[in-house]
Length: 319
Image (cartoon, rainbow, N blue to C red; front, top):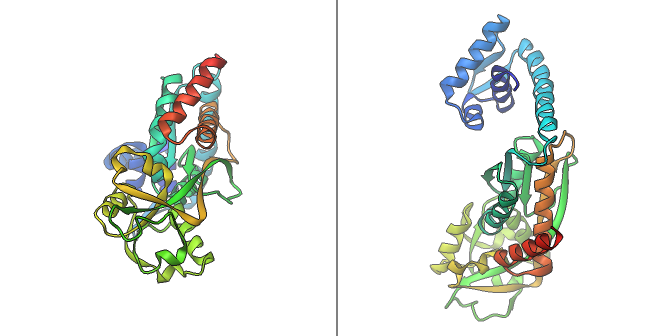
């Protein structure tokens, strides 16, 4: 309902980029440029300085940006309050999720939530946990599903459950027959690692460091941001990797051997929402639903499919 020119200006100023704003708003860059030109003509003053690969605000732009933030926030709140007069949830929710959650838990979560709320449109962004945390904190995403606990004071972080991390190797690998593995057992073997910023990488590095193996001494053969690529390389015998147990429950990964670490290592499944902003009922409802579903992973099931059936049966009884 807010003025489109104001929405576009706010996005450009927030991202410092016409290109990034266009991607966020699902517009073409020329359309974004046109909207900014229209707004500047409306006020008869330049609002943005363009140069050195970065867009910055002029003094007039600073004033417009401050008011735009307030106006757009009030507009969103008004629309949400009106929508909440009905029982049915509707609208777009932007969700950020880590690789493992996106691959093994999110499809089931979205399937169940959308069955209950068919007018909700989820818009999903997949990246490492650090990236997701930052984007929720900057209000670019409504909800974050990550494998690390956040200490950011602007975020509300709810720990839903834990998932064991396993060493995975291909059949025939020298470590494949082990029942458990210490940090020193892995030293010297080729390691297919996650990308910097990934929660599992940080947990693994801490595990090695606490157990006498400096992470810089590991024999890293690759660092990848794609979990499917990691699993593929391990299947081809390139080395070992450390992944969440959920990855081993996938039928496609039956060619891999999962081995517990000694001492055991766990990742946490957390739900992030901004603490310092008006929260729509849709955002709160989705976050609470995700926490409930994630909690059932640890309590009732070993696989996502089983988890969903547990939640479904519980909700059917409640209704």
